Image (cartoon, rainbow, N blue to C red; front, side, top):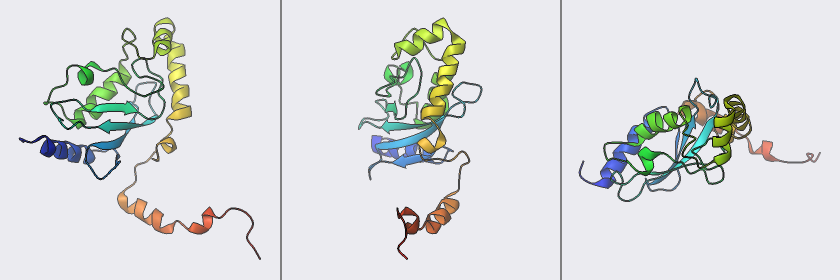
Length: 183
């Protein structure tokens, strides 16, 4: 794989072949959303986040830009911008890594093992260090408020493209009419 554009294509295709929902933003292959489910055995379990991924021209030699679009309460995620503080992406990225690594390993590890000593969200870090139970409760509240499956356009059970097509065909524009129907 000599050219970055071929590698970008391959990595994106590998990610699309996993269970992650991937939404392209434009016609190009450099900007897209991925739906990330919170890991089980964590206070993030049940939450779903829409994560924006921007691949630089130099990808895989340069790390992707990753950010949460819906709010998440985490010491290493900026609550306003959604940007993340993760060494493997920000400092130690290697062309050996790919997008599947980001979503199957790096981000789940970030959610499972927050690092309050290097925070982007100082309040979350302080609460985590002071009162772990209260921190986990706040995480769960954020999941309920901002990370429900419908907040990112998914349902709790994954649907096949055939099911989605049949639902789209059954959608009626009559349902969008507001107000009383004229007799």
